[in-house]
Image (cartoon, rainbow, N blue to C red; front, side, top):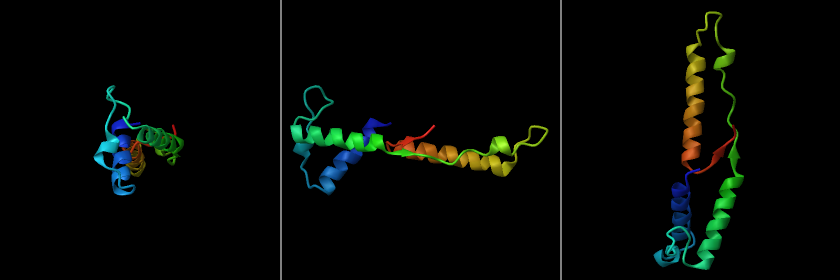
Length: 99
């Protein structure tokens, strides 16, 4: 899970929806946690909410669409590539995909 992307989404939400100022996103001296306790607590809840989301993609089909000579049908190969692309896009948003 990309913590930087998740933090970016959290801060964008805080600014756009909650109307928080830049000062409310000031980092503590460790450079990781937030200076203000309320922001830090909100950040913990935000991360927990994202951890709870797990997307389940449909299974790949190439193993079921292979000819006797070992040739994978093009439509199966492209389908599997699309599944991989979806996985990457979902994970780029900071969410998990079930194995």
